[in-house]
Length: 602
Image 1 (tube, rainbow, N blue to C red):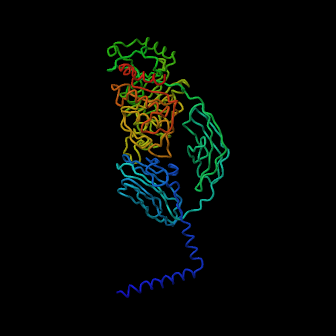
Image 2: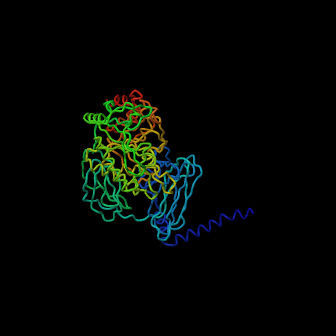
Image 3: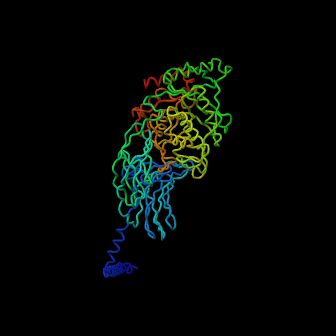
């Protein structure tokens, strides 16, 4: 036994010597092996997320600065509902080649995998990784495979996960050269918030990157696009670069464009309130002539349909039996004219909690236009407020793109509002008062979702706002009677403090990927188009905040001071103002909300 152990080393040495001699005796073999190893490369672009989510598509992901495994950034994604927060990245590979996929993760039930391999798709996962843990797997591409999608995701209801330093090592491909620099960049149609751009095609380009004032703001597959979310009466500089697998060209020559003045816009701040004009409740009736001059936009609540799907809107003033102090029609109209003479706007608000409106047919659409026009003309009003709640708006299962809606109730509403705008012209005031469920919830969920398991009302206002963004005077989302909503920090925010209002408003002014899709972004609104909706008192609705919290909200958004835990993505001194439900409830509460607004804006 001892002798056997002693003889093995000499046997191994003899075999090694023979193998070495054989290798050295075959010219070029060692060089070929080294060249093969040198051809292996990491094919993942931005695997450390140092360039944000560039190259990645996520349903609910964002880049964070802590925790990170290396560098200064990592991916954080949060599963919610039926969405397990997948982030994917497509790479170019060689057919019939071996690859190793690796990445570092933290969290519970985190997956790393590859699909479209042309052979057997692979994945690996960890049940629990309280600190950074490497996941790794291998696969071989099929004989005709040239693209593979890498992905990472969590699992339902398990909380956020993190990923960093994702790599795919294997034979690289010759990407060639980046495309030539685009030429012929020109500005086309310009509105108060958009600029249309076009340029000449570039041979070999698979796409184009569009830059605004030196910052990449969007991509395009063709040779034209429209940049939106711009401020009125503002000059912008645009450039475009051509892109292919080899990279991005240098930027084109610069073209400048100046946006026009916003429709119905104003550089001043506004206080918006709803006036109970068709009913009474515990707050009591307030005459139009008794509304203080502080109120800049007065919404008459409410015009309601004769039936849910009729489109026939009626406005009936509060009867004397219910509102003993109600003024006559003549006095009411005279008071409206007096408000308008003082520079105020008076609108009819359609819908409300009890006024469900579903324009399911073109006939209902046309009836809506004619009946609303009659109300506006009868009382000499300045415009229209859309306060559709409940089940007025929802999305069909196949309606997945907010930029091109197909659901009849959405399409018909957009058409009706555009018709009214065209009828009354540039002075027509159009405002909207959706609930957070129909707007900001769209950051996580849109319609029924990929598996048709979500509430079809989720994000359903987004296509309406998007289609009318150039006609929209003011959007004041109801930051009350709301559940918890995820902000752009991927944290849930709840009513009751300044952080909720800051987070919800930041989403409107920054824009956000709809349902987490980085390639489908709801663009920001102009600051002068946004007001913050708050209840006037504890009697008016859930989510009341004290005047000090209102001040904190305004300080953070307009001055970036006095902020709480939520970090905004900008500062907007031109934020239009505040909206409240309601003028009546504020009067009942000794005008606390009005006094807070006046004290802040002067």
